[in-house]
Amino acid sequence: MGLGSAQLPFPIFVVVLVHVLVLVLLLVLVLVLVPVYREIGDYFYARGKIDSALSFYQEYLRRNNNPSARRKYVSALYLAKQYDQAISEGESLLQVMEYPNIYGLLAYSIAERSNSIAADAAKGLMYLDRYNTKSLDRKQTAMDVYTKSNLLAISGDSAESLKVREEALRMEG
Image (tube, rainbow, N blue to C red; front, side, top):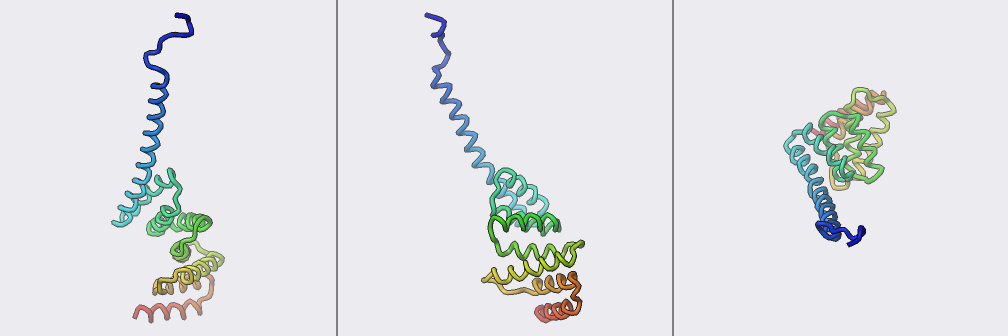
């Protein structure tokens, strides 16, 4: 036997096969485990544990930037009163895919945020209008009308804001 023909404990194809199998196993684990973060986020979201839901959505999005999960993440940010982040994420999401409810969450976030200014209110009113026109299967709610009233107040139109607020009170009955 010469120097170039040393015996390996395993044939080279077995070593390569083991490496390929390990890579396939890792890929399967990633594909199986990544959706778990979203499922757990959905679980906590449905039970009102918004901070926990946010953590799992963030981890899911870190591993897989899925528009559907981002939509839930924006909603969770709004419910957690993280309005600046909800606005940023919502506007970013709308660049990728249009979800009518995101327009509503953007309008609500701008109306609820303590540091909104008149320019923000104009954007919020535009988002609220899009929410109401793009959501064909829903009816305008008193919350929508209150949000419009708040946005008008932020924009400096107090008289119109009061009229709209009266409309919201009538809607509530």
